[in-house]
Length: 401
Image (spheres, rainbow, N blue to C red):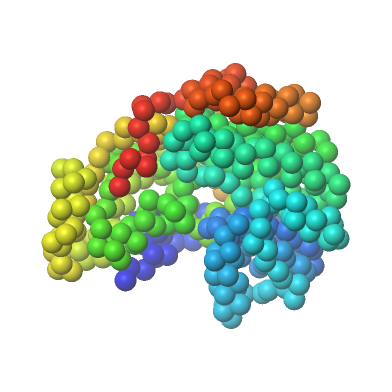
């Protein structure tokens, strides 16, 4: 079995030490002051980024930790990980709740508890593939935007000292609905940044995160199924550990309205194809490049443990796919000096809450009407997000292996 953490350091991030280690060390006293003994609530804490954030923040010994996620199995595994790690501090008051943060039972829980000092929201539809049709887009907007705003209204009743809501690099000049939904989410939280201490972070792909292309490689190998990989797409990457650390730093050290991103240069982007080739080299197994999905599937039927592994490299032709990623735009005012590993966007648009409420109501009215399509939703999003340039090809990632 390949050593995934070492593979990430050697072939993907090409960093043996965390990108954020220097900033964590430089601000360790302040982080301890802000976190030690405090009450923490994490929404979506069973996912890769949420659980990594939890592990990062536990290093500074909060007094209470509640974790909410719809993935009951994920919460179980998170608990086992934390309880089984001899080096991990876990507060006595630690509870996990398999529930949706938009449900009435969550509101009961939140209002019944004493004020949480630190609240972080990682609940999100994060895949570009989720923009298949009007139903999948409505579900995405409901989770990424509508529920996020309702949660902010709930937070106003018991204001935390710090609130963090995760974003994505795809919110910068978005070309897909997922990125547009996160851009709209940013505008929602910015509208509340005068009333609450709110920060967010855009960051790179998390290598081997749950549901990612790279994590899928391991599952395909277990099932003796072929690998499918875009040959023309390159991305920024951080490790799972780094994904939690950037969120912790943004949550605890930012000023309200700040958008954080990792300081990564264009040359730090890596092609998925290069990672795939390195993955099989590290596994001491050659690959068999196939000319089509069908050829790869047929080859897999006859592949033994000693045979080259069937891999299909293809050029991207699905909706919403950008060949590269970016963290900020030409109009953003960026602070590159405060942190050694992090940049901060300081001039995010802050619309009145009434304007944001009207935007959300317009979207909800459209979808409640029953007379809407994917294109009408995209058109309405473009109306409210001037930098949204949707790429529509008529093909979805669900049509690929």
